[in-house]
Amino acid sequence: MSDHMKIMNEKTGRIVMLAVDHGYFQGPTSGLEEPGKTVEPLLAWCDAVSPTKGVFLRCMPPESKTPVILRASGGNAIVYSDPVELERELSIRSAGLADETAREALRGQIADEIVNRELSNESITVSAAEAARLGVAGVSVSVYVGACYQKESILNLARMSDEGRREGLIVLGITAVGKEMTRDARYLGLATRIAAEHGADVVKTYYCEGFERVVRGCFAPIVIAGGKKVPEREALAFCSRAIDEGAVGVDMGRNIFQSAHPVAMIQAVRAVVHEDLSPDAAYEMFEDLSVAPLTD
View 1 (cartoon, rainbow, N blue to C red):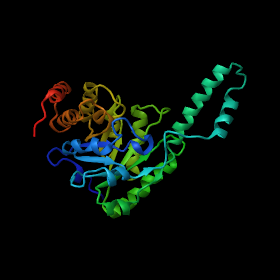
View 2 (cartoon, rainbow, N blue to C red):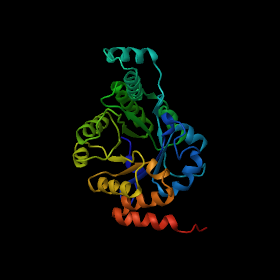
View 3 (cartoon, one colour):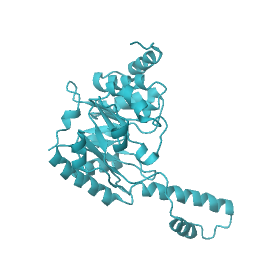
View 4 (tube, one colour):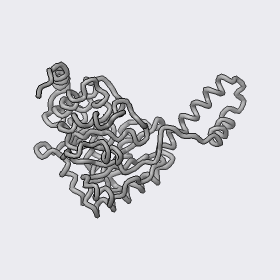
């Protein structure tokens, strides 16, 4: 069995992970246009970092000792074009719809649905053997429970669990959530348990109302995703609630590197996770660090 504890903070048994793998399907995400410049000043404050293979090979500081959880599933993108499917769906759903403006609006809606559905069409992009050769601590694989390619993504995780165990790698199962999937305790409880059942050593999911039920139903440690950028005070608050309700840490990206003060923000998040600092105290810390002069 892979020892997930080797990436946890020795004193607290918790973890602050820095997620910088967004570009594998989003391209040059805001704040990650130049990944090396984004990542370097943040590495001192995280317990692990989650890059893609390209970022790991070309953008990570070679002297970095921060454990790496390498993105190992992919093959999708936020763009998707299948005009035959689009026109077929449009023909079926626009029957009796004469207004051309409404028809074009429906076309756009269907196009969005197709893109969202096809995001689940992932394969393994880095083998466990290659990840081990690169010297990383572990790999991450997304599972799309309830999506079009649910089975394939779950089998990706199961196979990586088998191979990763042979190579001594930690396997992080990520419960990806599309637009049509509700991020509630029922769905996230289902997705996290499925990830654990198929061999994930650690599971990444979203914070939600009733998060304690999600934690109770998942026998693997849970870290929460930061999700889309929200105000710093709000991000620190849901981070604190998640820790109080059983999460072992965070794997946060946009709420750190898209902050106006990323280094201050990651230190505030770290204080919440490892020092149980209250959200108000952590936000005050963030504000103080944001205006503090840089020193050598």
